[in-house]
Length: 562
Ligand code: C2O
Ligand code: CU
Image 1 (cartoon, helix red, strand yellow):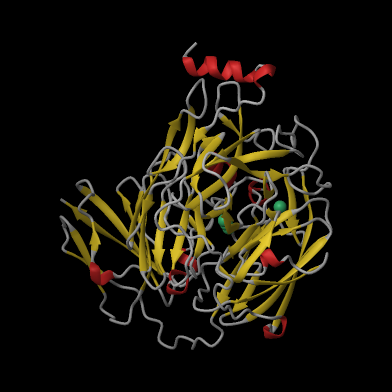
Image 2 (cartoon, rainbow, N blue to C red; image 1 turned 120 degrees about the vertical axis):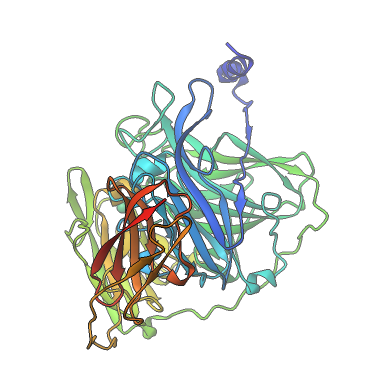
């Protein structure tokens, strides 16, 4: 028995019950700039005493780097899938073309490099990225694959807010895991973990400075909701929702955060003494049926050691203030022009309906089907969607492409802490929620966006739908051309260039497969003038398939790398 096991053994004996053994909170590494390399891999980690746990990570052994983006920049993502499974990488909350979105339609086979890019149009806020392969989302997310995206913009930069990452600006990805007897993550028999894992750390503690501290909290669970609060019931100040800063901080002592949602909050430690401690808590005791994680049992399909109790998320030790401490809560933040019900020209209703065994819930009695487009939205339309849940359980509703404004809840007015731009929300049992969104900038008749429940078992079970944004005024093509292109040089060594006999031809998608049919590179809407880098390809024969923007038809040509 090593020293750590002895300590753990002591701590578990009743006489030592009040002593907790904490581990220092991991702060994910950062990436910034405009080109981001993300290597998705199977790996392992010492989560707790005993066997190492097989995990998944991006550039690391659990979770992934926090990506900093600047509004207005065009960012290029190089996502290389080095796992043994097909995956996808979705940029949750991001407003971008559907073909770049990384939903279940943009599969990345093992070994393949996927290179989406987009201009960052979102507001400064906290976003995230995660796998989204249909039927496999829970399995891949349980391994720990995901990461934060933090967008900065001029309006946020002009405010006196804490923004020193890892010092007074702390990302917290909250999730829980269950371990099997071999110390491996298990997502069976049910979605609820027994132990908190925050940024990959179990029993985390952090030393935070004696000043205003910004916490960027993501509910990265499979299914559990969190009713956030502090152990001394001090108020905290919500400054941002999923898609941007609020007009002004909203003071609360509790707030619910459902799967996929993010909140940025300020907590004031300036009145605490150095060496004091407090806990960020989940006050999950006493919720009625329907709150995910409110179930009473500790075992069985919906049981867990964290069910229906109040439990610690992060132990905080108060440390000395930093030299550039922010100590004054801003009275106002930014001035948002929100959408209202009267802006909407189209209204839609979705009903949560009973599923079948193994696929517990659906929308409108229609299980998800990759081959079915469920809704068609016109480009630039402003729509009001109402999602009605007269079913037995709560859900987390999420829609891709847009940030919306919640305008009503059936159970009463939306909470002030959810009054900002949102892409996900808690849909309680016996509630209906209406939101208004504008679907601008990106039309694509072929690649849909998703709406779904963000509880991994529910989405994997088909509680999802697809919508396309269609450019209704697009002029019908009069002269549909034949797609034709040549590759040069061929044979090539470092780069290939594509040229079209018809200069009006635009590439919608390029994929390159090797001689045995493995997909090597996927390039949505590539800028072909830059050429395509083949310098890392081994010598041999390759096939380049090009899908044309207008006709969406494809042609394959062979080339050689020597
Ligand atoms: Cu965070 Cu469709 O997902
Ligand atoms: Cu659900």
